[in-house]
Length: 355
Image 1 (tube, rainbow, N blue to C red):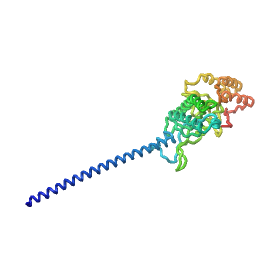
Image 2 (image 1 turned 60 degrees about the horizontal axis):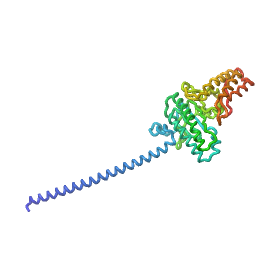
Image 3 (image 1 turned 90 degrees about the horizontal axis):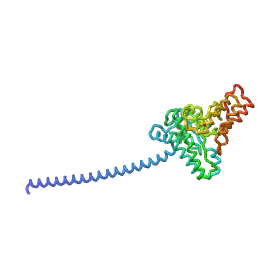
Image 4 (image 1 turned 135 degrees about the horizontal axis):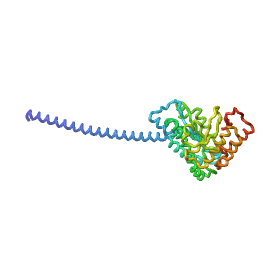
């Protein structure tokens, strides 16, 4: 074998070895790429699973927060820290009439079932109108309008009163169903108080436990209006500040100029009846007569006031559970003032001595 042949053979062997090495590297690279792709697929599946777990946890947590608050926290608009601010809000309180006696006569399981049905329906209506559900306290519901989202002061108030009207209308059917399903002695009624004004809204509590809520005199008055509505035999009581915001869209009955328990400043209060043009037929007769009586009451013309209130009383709707009505409460009040005149300096304010 010549030197040239030996050189050619060595060259060929080197080329073969190079090709074999390249082939091996390609196989190893392809294998590594496959491994990396598989790792990427596994990571993607893990990420998807973690995402599903987070979404499930978020879904569960969202049930403990109003949708508006939940959205603002997860979008980063609101920080979960102790902070608050002043805002003009409309605040709503409601509870079931005579719920204490109802709960005393029911076992806890059916009571819980009935209450959950009621709260679910009321919550659906609240969310429909953009209300922020603050809390449930037994049968009581607290809702406010104007934070974290607002439609403007007047529209917030209007959405709130529309919500209250729909809740009352819904209860007419729902209460019959609950009465039949849970063997109640009479249909359920709900009582509502609504007030508008400046509140402090935000996160209150500690670094480890926060409550997003509203506080202030506006909130306290809304609660007082809900509880004092029973004294007049009405089911939705508004303050004058709420009435002023919605007066062109609703029908009301002027009720009183009153100083509620725990408050020094008197407030004009109204019974919310319906949206404009939707008032029940009886109210078309009752309201002019009642307001005539109220006008004479403030004029201290007691005989004319009593006559008007007695006429209105005969027209008032009475049903099981309604112990009085606005016309009826004024008759003894006028008779008392007739016997004991309040004087020329009387400001017309009636001071409540109970909630």
